[in-house]
Length: 267
Ligand SMILES: Cc1cc2nc3c(=O)[nH]c(=O)nc-3n(C[C@H](O)[C@H](O)[C@H](O)COP(=O)(O)OP(=O)(O)OC[C@H]3O[C@@H](n4cnc5c(N)ncnc54)[C@H](O)[C@@H]3O)c2cc1C
Image 1 (cartoon, rainbow, N blue to C red):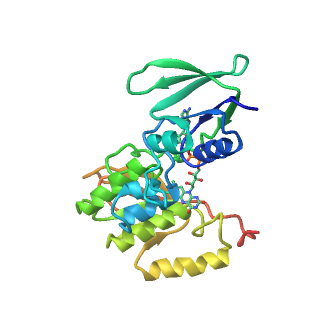
Image 2 (cartoon, protein in one colour):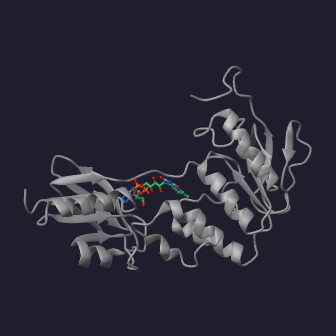
Image 3 (tube, protein in one colour):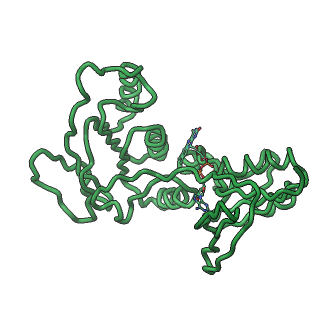
């Protein structure tokens, strides 16, 4: 079907991949990607390695093996795909096959027609409603912008101690990054093992031993209940342990419920 309008919402991994595939299959299609952020087609997987300092420029995360940046101009000139960054898809009218988009810097609103619509809106970082999460020095690691903030703070020597909440893959990668940069790290995990969705309990023990050997302060079965600001003290609350009161974003941890007995390893 030639000349059809293909509209893709989301411009990180799935969106550009779908758009490029559509272009290969239909050289005549009019393909547009809308992305609410400023940066497209980057490797989220490389963010911790950028923070660690394994390569100097964050742009490496969206450079092709041939050295070209995968920015909107690249998609337009090399793949004949239009990209609109800082553009939020606000509403889909499926009857009229139109998407209302807002250009975030100017607020201007427009309707884009489509024949085929691809939703590649991905996910958001999950941040539990912990008091103090809005404090300076507290961040998720989801975007190149956040990675640049953390790396700049590291480069400037402004991070004297780090607390990572959650021992999933990104948490463990960030432990590695901070450790490599010589920053003491505390890793807090509510469950009774690291990488709970990936490793059996017994295998996790090996990794936990390794982390402790590196000097990581590992707190399993520990729930973050509040993040303290600079100078604040969480002292004296029964059943809670203050882990790092010295920096903005310091954590107050307490014991969480144990995993139900008989569930020592995962299938
Ligand atoms: C730190 C980190 C490390 C990772 N490491 C690995 C790894 O080692 N291995 C691995 O396989 N995966 C890893 N991942 C996961 C991988 O990056 C994701 O699976 C991948 O980014 C998913 O791509 P996506 O395009 O589906 O979604 P996303 O990356 O979430 O992109 C979706 C995009 O859609 C945009 N969007 C959402 N709603 C709208 C809207 N209404 N209008 C316009 N735009 C919108 C968002 O701004 C976002 O940019 C890692 C992720 C992170 C953050």
